[in-house]
Image (cartoon, rainbow, N blue to C red):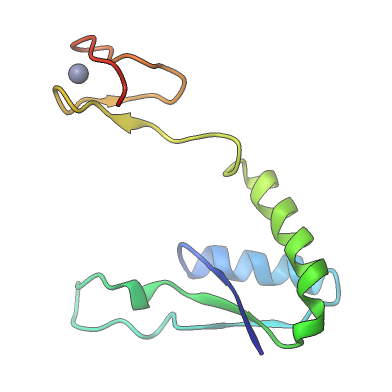
Length: 104
Ligand SMILES: [Zn+2]
């Protein structure tokens, strides 16, 4: 068993496992039920995808790269929050649309 990838949520974890199984790689999710007190966010809530066979790692890594790229998560940064006024500014803009402050 090999700890492979920390997913954002159980849906992402399952999608990744589907992508891995399409390449005949066995994987499983651990940790998604480790939530603590009700409504409390904890790092333990993030599900980890584990590889069953450690030897699958090189292929699994390339599957993960493709998975993340297909989702559009890698090259595209998300919106940022202006340090001056707190407005949310879309990625691609380097100054705040509201107050004109530079992105820090
Ligand atoms: Zn601003």
